[in-house]
Amino acid sequence: MMKITVNNRTLEVSGERTLLEELRDAGCDIPSLCYAGKAKHEASCMVCMVRDVATSQMLPSCSTFPTEGMQLDTESEDVKNMRRMSLELLLSDHRADCEAPCVVVCPAKIDVARVILHYDRGQMDKAKAVLRETASADQLPCVGCKASCEKACRRGTLDTAVSVRAIIEEVAKYKAEIPNTASSAAKVQHSFSSKLGRYSEAEKEWLKEVYNQPSRCLHCACEGKDKCKLREYASQAGIKSSRYGVSSHQMVKEQQHVSGRLYYEPAKCVRCGLCVYNSRNGFTFQHRGFDMQVLIPEENKAHIDEHLADLCPTGALFLRQD
Ligand code: SF4
Ligand code: SF4
Ligand code: SF4
Ligand code: FES
Image (cartoon, rainbow, N blue to C red; front, top):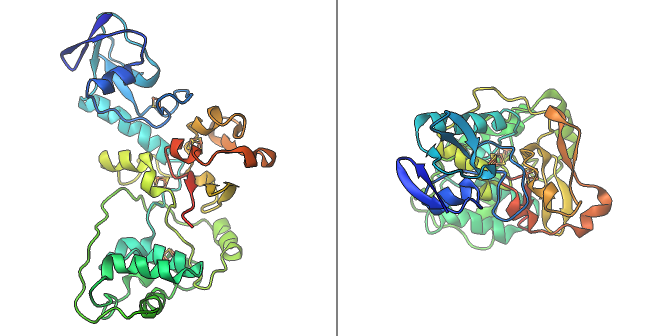
């Protein structure tokens, strides 16, 4: 056993476990993206940084082991700024379209995007159930609303906005009527959503060909947002957008089917490598540096376990709900 000091508190540690493991067990709140417990990993994200007080050096806690007498700082502004910078660097090459614009602006907080998603798939019962989450026993809130959703609709940047209100009304009329009284807006979303997702000219052309649903909706929201640690940490750090700008070269909404319900969206990948190191050659890295990306050879897809979605720290690997 050996002694280390963490934020002026003395800890006794074995020396066989990483700083991250020891510090978390001691109650320190340290973020991590490329580390996931017992899964194989290589330090790459640098969001788990702590400071060695003696040398002022920042250390990735997930891959550093304690030494006798080490003094660590895990909560100063310097440390938080370092982690924040790491997050911003990741976000500078990331299509962070966490929320659909129509959802963000809806004054009644209807999950418009999810209603339309089910509508497009012909799942009217599910679409109705989503609508009921915010309009349950009350009036359809769209009555009298100035349709902020349609003004914000990203489809409008291609040609014309989706007729969101007409779809919502059609869904509301399905089977049972929603009674006509005042509405109660319920859910409030204040999480990180960068608004970085303006479409490039190439994407606009590409999207016109790809999307052909009855509603013409582009399904802007990120399908893996509910389990995304990148978004969680960015929200906690109060990041609104990356100070380094954004330069994602990945096509937005290009989604590849992997196996079962598992899908991969390259534009949401932070290249942490967890899927590569833990999928028995199912995933591999292609290229290097800025151009590096995860590749899933077609012949390996059938053997890939759906549970890899749990390991992925972003919405890049996600399970499609329906
Ligand atoms: S394209 Fe669809 S998801 Fe995107 S803003 Fe318009 S209605 Fe919402
Ligand atoms: S992967 Fe995370 S940060 Fe990126 S768009 Fe999805 S929810 Fe937002
Ligand atoms: S797909 Fe997910 S797990 Fe794999 S490298 Fe990208 S972010 Fe990491
Ligand atoms: S969690 Fe330590 S470098 Fe990613």
